[in-house]
Length: 203
Length: 190
Image (cartoon, rainbow over all chains, first blue to last red; front, top):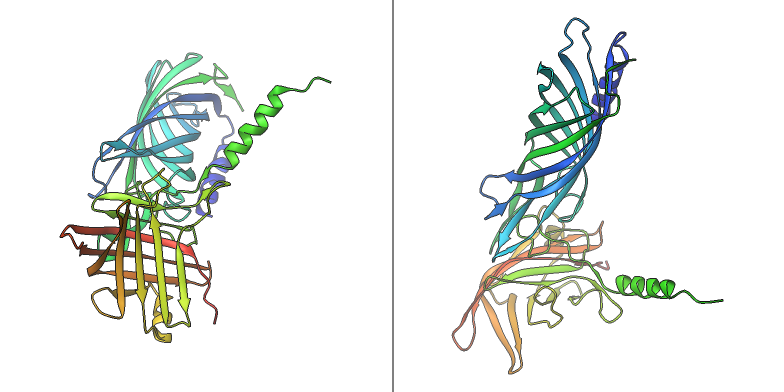
């Protein structure tokens, strides 16, 4: 419910901008992800996967054209790879991500951006419905190159603010000792954006 | 009309796919073992001397969806036996067997609360053993210390829990059964 409220509020905000400019883009790329944890896992390594999405960017204040608000809608696969007995086991967490952000162009072809991801778990190859939390929040920071061109490049590092795992603390002999919440995602994204409207357009 | 070989091939591919589905749901911390669940997933697993052994539904035309044996005798004795194999092996190399006797209505009530009821395996009423199967015959290793926790979930018609114990074989070899967990279909008739 809270997430629906955030999404609706954001779009109402965009609708209220009378003289805004918008740019629509498609994005695609690869990402490296892993998890931070409190000693819960023995050996893990990150994993490479893909993401795909679309975004809209507006300049809300005409007097500050370098400052823009952007929202990404992305399908992204995060996860981690435990290494046990010399074998690797991929744990995939597939999210639908809603990521509003603030972007600032330092020069024409170089801008930085930062915001919060609201991720909704869509599927996992491990555990059952209640093993992983349905929602995750993550803070991210990144930069864009050649944003004024039709094809631009971006990179972004995101750090999970909320744990993704809700599971049981299982002792080898004594069994369940309680519940645990742990595993915070860390993701580095690298990709290409196709700016559908090369020039920023009016609403 | 000429028959399409493509359709025949597609049919056989689909038939093989449908007859060989793997119902294993891994644990998020140790994916070699099944996830601890309380939803009648018909799976169990344990680390036996640090080697993962599991039982999980293998939906093939030649195999049954579960190899567990769960018997409730007049609500006073509960017998659970899980036949475990190494992943992707069909040979059930080990079994773990638990016999819980003199159960009372209070015990059953506790089994429906919290994380379930813990039964210590170092007394005469509650017994646990590991059965190691080989060509030379079966070897029984009785639990010397350890426990089994049993939870009955009427809503999902399942019996779930965890277990762990240690024991010594007649030849003096020590066995450790760690991180045991199970989740099977179960319906108590009242």
